Every structure is written in structure tokens, then in C-alpha cells.
Length: 124
Image (cartoon, rainbow, N blue to C red; front, side):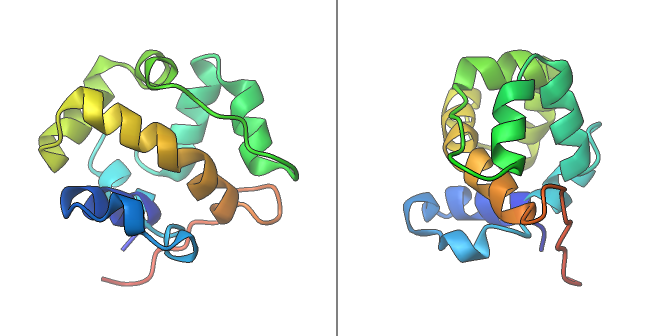
């Protein structure tokens, strides 16, 4: 299960507040693979292209992670990707954006201990 999968699965099951930070790396990949983004590297590229370069660099680098707002995510991801994720999860877009904004910085940080994304997707 990839990182985004674990995050979204936790949200879907109502466990978003209790997801162990150590378990977050490995959740993103499977859901992203079902969207036009494709994987975590794809979401990073999309966020950078969408004007969130400073935020993304803070997640990849050492030091504190800059926050990202739901509105920033909506603009950077685009409605098509958001609609795809909503269709996969069944979570309303506004709630989904809040949840992703809350988890994405620490998830990317955890997946990039050496400053680059390390997809950590164990076999299903």
C-alpha cells in the first residue's frame, strides 16, 4: 500500500486523526497511480508547476515543513485531478482538500529523508 493510499484509507475509515506518522510513508502511490498524476513524483511536479515550489522544497529539505492551504492545493492540482481523487475516495472535495493539506507536508517529508522522493510501496 502506498503513502497516499494509507492517508486516504485512514481518512475514509475515520482514522485520519490517529494515523501513525511513521506509517504515512507508503500511502500516496496507489491512489495517485489511478489519476493522471501517476505517482508521488507526479504530485510533486504538479505542485511545483502550480506555484508551490517553496512549500515543496521545505518538505523535501531539512527544517520545518511549510503548510499548504486547501485553496493552494486546489489551484495546483487542478479540478480534474481533484475530481479523480474524489471519485476514488468518496470524500467531498472540500473535506478532502483539508485532509490532504494536513497530511501532505509530513508525508512528503517522511518519503524524502535524503531530499528526494523515495517511493516506498510494498507489494499489496
